[in-house]
Length: 335
Ligand code: NAD
Ligand code: DAU
Image (cartoon, rainbow, N blue to C red; front, top):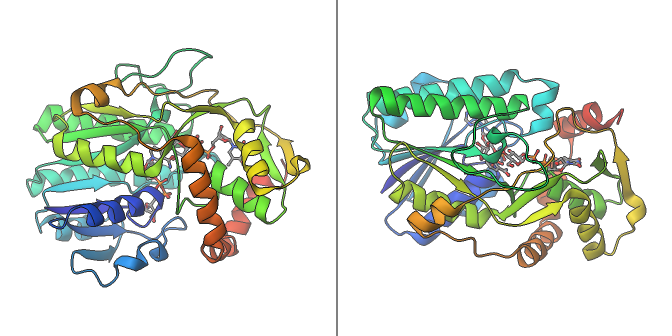
């Protein structure tokens, strides 16, 4: 099976490529990635000499490069490419609109032109908006995104659905909750808190710290994407979630305790504007129809993840320089 993965140098995409090439001897992957600030060739260094892996640097909004790769007629395109950080979308939504919406249009058009049998759009639970203290999101919930990031992802979902309805394109959409694990860029909560704690830097917790996220290990997400890519029904949406809710502050305290650091590093800072209070995914459809279940418990996964950041200090120290520091100062400077 030949797969065109987009955004494969980011956190989830690189874990997906490593997982797929490790699991299936008959899978070949081409990875199209622009290498934005979030893309890192180091993540896939172990595959550089693999005859089943090829990297192409390029933008999913660039019709020429997308056409060249789509004309090779992969059996599926799996789109991880996106601007993915909510806080950056608040600073400037432009890149989010371009990549997350227009880029998806380019990929969908290429699927039509080259008769690609399957397009997998990697979406997010954030398209559903925010939950109160009880209940969970199912696939039939309305789309009520609250940030420029989630609005751009919801737009892409609608576009993908429209191509299914209008052109009969074989599209499946996955919506996953918060991922954690190796290779996550240290702007997101868990790797930011681990690496800041290791550097004895302030741990900035937004608002009262009582926002809730539903955590899933990235490998469980990758396995779900594989199953949906192979067996999902055309035009369907599949929620993916870890059934693992935590308050942000409890995650931060847990990391501090595991690293033997002091809680005095915690600083409650000005809240994220439009901050969604709670996410919780109902993934029963995926479990009952395609037999997927998350396998990695949070206590096990977080221990492995902390250990990964301890073992790969060079990886994240290399990131926390230059552009990262400018972003950090812009966002956290006045908080
Ligand atoms: P990431 O920011 O770590 O990686 C994004 C990758 O896309 C990078 O390699 C980047 O270089 C590439 N990219 C960005 N713009 C591009 C463009 N125009 N053309 C080609 N490549 C481009 O993101 P992630 O956390 O790995 O998320 C991957 C996908 O999963 C995203 O679509 C995101 O919305 C979705 N998602 C993420 C989570 C999560 O918790 N991280 C949860 C649910 C869904
Ligand atoms: O839910 C899926 C989404 O999860 C994905 O679609 C996004 O791509 C991904 O970035 C993530 O979005 P969140 O906004 O939930 O993740 P983030 O790690 O940025 O924040 C998690 C929670 O932690 C959120 O409530 C905000 C809070 N937070 C985050 C940061 C970076 C803090 O309190 N302090 C921080 O410094």
